Image (cartoon, rainbow, N blue to C red; front, side, top):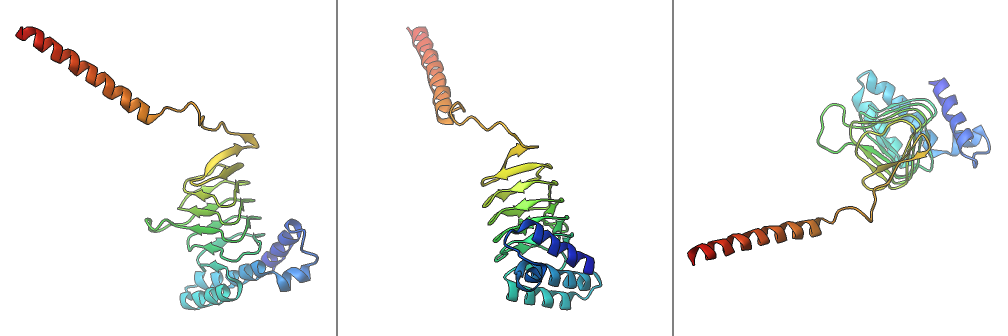
Length: 213
């Protein structure tokens, strides 16, 4: 646990230019406090002290504004920047050296049992207000943009944006976007089908009138 704490402090020092010293991180960073208390709660949870683990996690939420279920698995070097409103679900797994900003939710959709929450690989960054919902993996070195809603698996080295999120970069190469100008117009297509059907019916009606004459 001591080694994890050292890794968490180093991660914050490396990634936050506002962090002036390790002592400042240790005493002043609520994201660091939340992760430390989670590690205590998680150890209790793994040893089946579920009630005490949940009690510590709720105290953690009260004092930091960050809710981490004690069942969540968190690797070394997690940096929760600002942190207010972050929610991390029970079966979430977070790799090493990940970064979460304020308002992030690593949650479920409410439709699964068992593994319900996402797995983040190593070096994943999730922007403020983003939601990653479901039991899938976000690959190593991926980035989720602020406000994005991710509902399906993300390959490694990807960048996701939007609601629902779409992949715009893989390995720093831009993914071809959907052509918004030349896509088929469904209304126009349906009108063409109706016009063709009407012409066919008119032809058939004209043939029947000719037979009667």
